Image 1 (cartoon, one colour):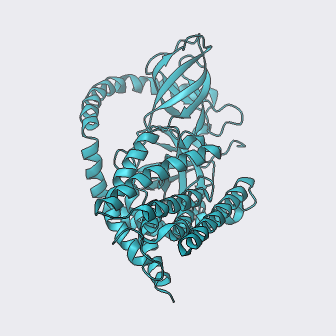
Image 2 (spheres, rainbow over the protein chains, first blue to last red):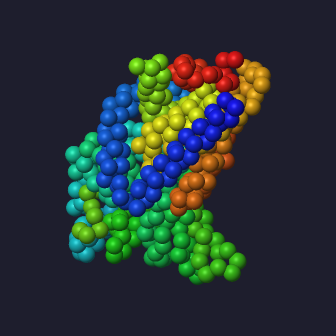
Image 3 (cartoon, rainbow over the protein chains, first blue to last red):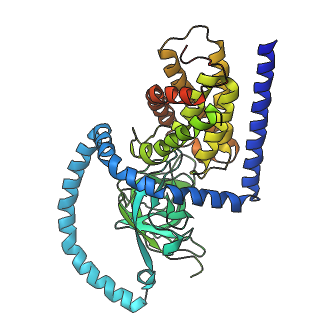
Length: 278
Length: 169
């Protein structure tokens, strides 16, 4: 009898908790509690910021070791790939000097200097994502530094992602490889535009809406399209085409892209203080 | 102040520091342990379905503070997981040392799958794309190992008026 009573109480407790959870989820979905929830989340992130920074300094040697052990095979092949890349870059450097001169002249001619005029906020990546279901990083700049939600984030090589949450001192950046990320892009050689979506894997994007008749070349550069209402400014490098093929009966190509930035090894980034309304 | 009210908050804060500041940097194949889910599982093991569900709800809400999935999703999944583990623990007549560890690993895998399933129902399709199998396997492994620390700590925190169910018998 006592066991049955305890069992009934447990079921009642569970029912109560499930109903409470569903109510909270519903409020969050409808946006009714968005202000309160957002304030709670911002407060929690700010409160934990110093602890995360302190822990990172202590834990990073260990995490580097773990990363090295579990990623040894990739490091070896990456080393070989990088040596080849250095040779290629030395050759390209000479060509680039000439191209740079031409580009400067063209920019002067067309007055396409808007990208250079975008104010930037330099930031350091201070934390990896807490969840196993999100490809995000946390940076050490927030609203107090002029960082707002929706602003694009870049690194030396190109596009990193966009700010999805900003508290007073920190901001969360959704990486372009997250499955919820979509970036309007343009293939540099063909000029075709499409949408690059994250695959959930850090080293890969997929472009949709590329016409089956378009000739897409391997290693072709991909940049942001900057079309009207695009959330990213134009001509930011996104990556290079890895592969492209037309599935049987399809009118579109399946194009995979390797990001221009190594998103596993982000240290410093820049937030572009840019919005589509500019 | 009851024993649980005095002991549980420091254990929760410790778990939160692990979850927020330490474990995200200690990843295996890009996946980190889910220590707040593990605390819910440990509560179910140590103090039965009632405490498992309540603890899961609390740790889930805390986890939701730092995620971008709908607020309350982790609370829902963690409380169900804590409850289920408490139910399961009540059916075991004789415990050995490895049963709690195995239970923690399997329940962690179940919790992750439940989170992904609930997420997809709530239009969070991205949680089931990507390397879900890897996430489930690695979280099960890491949480199984971490349970050697977390189960005794949770058992200590929840020791009081409730009868112990499995761990420590």
